[in-house]
Image 1 (cartoon, rainbow, N blue to C red):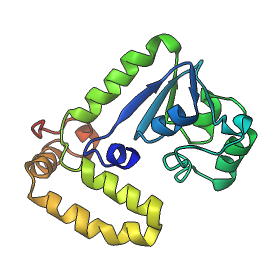
Image 2: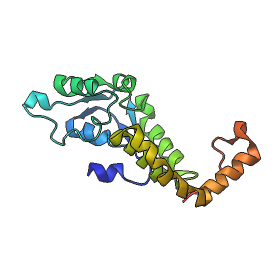
Image 3: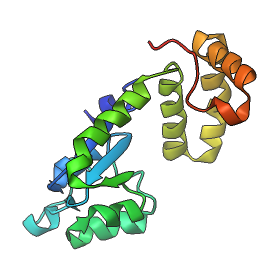
Image 4: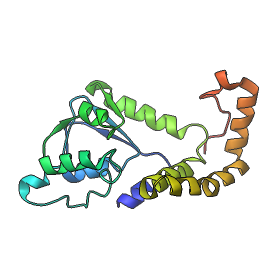
Length: 178
């Protein structure tokens, strides 16, 4: 299941509110972007029931910024705030509780609009770096990026860049939405 979520050909966005524990946390961390309400709390609680992560910790822990931090979260079994997880670069955004769903929807719309052909290739490059290190990530660039030169997404994006210039370009690509 985790591999299928990670390999979706588009950015995945998850919204977290309330308690996000154990398997729920592992599923949430499989998403590309995690938006959490200020009141959200995160924990791996398996230590309290005498087990380890039952889903293998496959998702978020292997890409946690530091293995020492992942060990702390798993071994302590403590609850951590959304802000703490954001400060540790485990989740992306912390937002007011009342804004959670609208901001999650806005993020989804943002990623769905404009040039989308590069998403699966960008995700593969990042995954290659996480799994195999910088050398594997570097090796994958030509394989992943070169075919994008033949897409209307890239041609339209480059056309817009040349027409508007670098200062006025961001967010204004004329590429068709697919």
